[in-house]
Amino acid sequence: MANPAPGFKTKPEHRVDLLPEGRRVRVTFGGVVIADSTHALRVEETGHGPAYYVPEKDMRMELLQPTDHKTHCPYKGDASYWTIETTEAEPERSVNAVWGYRTPFDEVAGLAGHYAFYPNRVETIEVS
View (tube, rainbow, N blue to C red):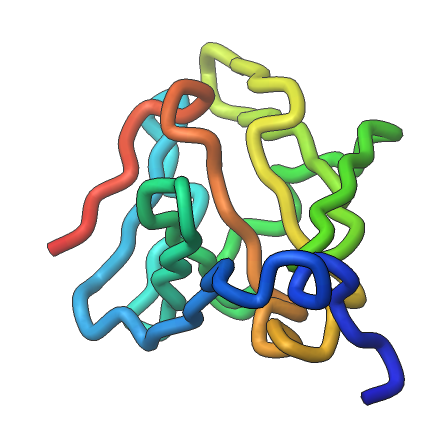
């Protein structure tokens, strides 16, 4: 592997499973649909609840502004963050509400081009 995750060497029992989500994932903020997909990934990771990652093609990217905030996961890689800024009649903003891995580690390469949302920073994440 060219870009292996160091976390799996120290904790090989740790799981990060990328599963196709067969249901529709729809995310809203400020009354605006930010993401709507039938091609999302459900990520199930040891010690965490499921997270839904939506492909870029199903996102309203024009409503996302990149921020300088970054974090690192020893299993997934370096995360970048985006702030949601709606442009409707009552503009709203949610700082660092969205994250994604531009160049994830090889074990989770499928996360590239997908974005996840903090449930407490958006209005809804509907899975139906």
